[in-house]
Amino acid sequence: MAGWPTKENKLHDNLRNRLGNSIKRLKCLQINLQHSRLATDNLVKIMNEEDVDVVSIQKPYNIGSSIGGIPRTYTVISAGAGKKRAAIVIKSKQLDAILITQVSDEDATVVELKLGRVTLIVASMYFDIKRLIEADLKKMQAVINHAKGIATLFAVDSNSRSTSWNDVLTNKRGRAVEVFITTNQMHIANEESCYTTFQNSRGASNIDLTILNNRAIKLIQEWAMHDKESCSDHNIIHYELGNEAFRPDVTNNKERRYAVTQKGLEKFQEMVIVTMENIARGSEKTDKTDDTLDEVLCRRTSLATTSEAAIEEPHSVLDYACRSSFKQTGNAGGGFRHKSVPWWTTRLTIMGREVNAERRRYQRKKKTAERKISSH
Image (cartoon, rainbow, N blue to C red; front, side):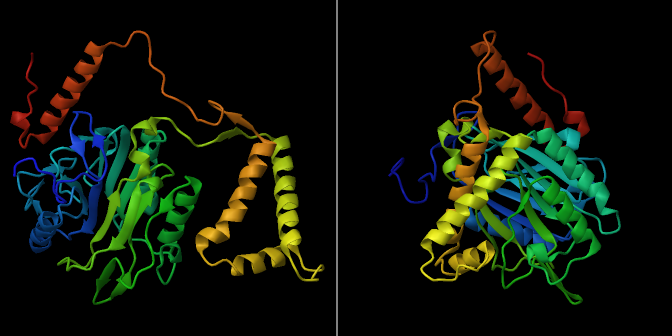
C-alpha cells in the first residue's frame, strides 16, 4: 500500500536538511580503493545492498583526471585538475552537501553537510608516504581553522603507525600525528579489532584513521571494520553518524564553559585532591591508613564492574571542582545561543538557499564548458 509505514522507510531521527527534506541517521563508509576498478565496483555493490549514504574514498578509480566507476545517480565530489587521490561519494539525494574549495585539492576533499540543524564537515584525505607528513598535517590544520569549532570528521589514509590506534609499533610519522591530535584536542574513533585496516604480502598495519573533534565525537556510532571483502589491500571501515545530538534544539550548546584563572586553577587542584581523598578514605573499610591516595584510588577502580562505573566518580569530582573554582560563562550554564539580527528578513533566507542551490549545480557539472550559472 502506497505511503504505508514500513520498517524500511521508517526514519531513525526526525531530521530535516536545509531544503526541508527529512533525512535519517547517516550510514558511512571509508576505504582506500587503490585506484582499482574492481574495488570500485565492489564498493558500489555494498553501497546499494546496505543503503549507504556517504563514502570517504582515498585513491579512487581514475579515468584521466576524472573519477570513474561511480554511477551517475550518485554525487561524486573531488577537487583539483590532476589525478584524484581523495573523494567523497554521496548516494542520498536528500543530503545537502557543498564542497569547501578553499581547503580542498587532489589529495583532500572537504565538504560541508547539513544534518537537520547540525552542520558537519567531512574531509577525505590521503597522506602520501613520500611526502613529509607535516605538509598534510598543515592541511588538516587549515580545515580545523576553517571549521571554527563546527563538528569535523577526517577520514584519512595517514600512512602512519602508532600504538595509540592499536598498531604494534609507533613510527616517526605516527608520533607526528599523535602530537597533532593531542595539540588540537582531537579524537581517534578507531577501536581495537581482530582485523587491521591494511594488509598485503609484506605485512599488516592500522594506517587508515577516523579522526574527530569534540563536537563530532558525539555523533559517531558503531565504528568497526567491515567483514565484507573490499577487493583492496585496505579494509572497509563503517560507522554511523547521528544520535541525540541531532535533536532540533542542538543549536543551544548545553556544555558548561568556565573562565579559567591562575587563582582558580590553584583552588581547582586543591578541591580535586581534597574531595577525592574524602571520598576514597571515607569508603575504605580497611586499616591501611598508610596507603597513598593513588593506591586507594587504584583499588577502587579495580573493583568497578564497568568502564562507565570507573569514570563516573572522578567525573563527578571534576565537575564539582570546576563549579566550585571557576566562574561559568555564557547563559547560566546553558552555553551560548545563536542570536538573530534585526536586519535579517525572510527574503534573505530564500536568497541564501538559492545561492547554495546554484553553487551545488555548478559543482556537479562534469565539464568546464557546462559550468555556467544561469542568470535570473
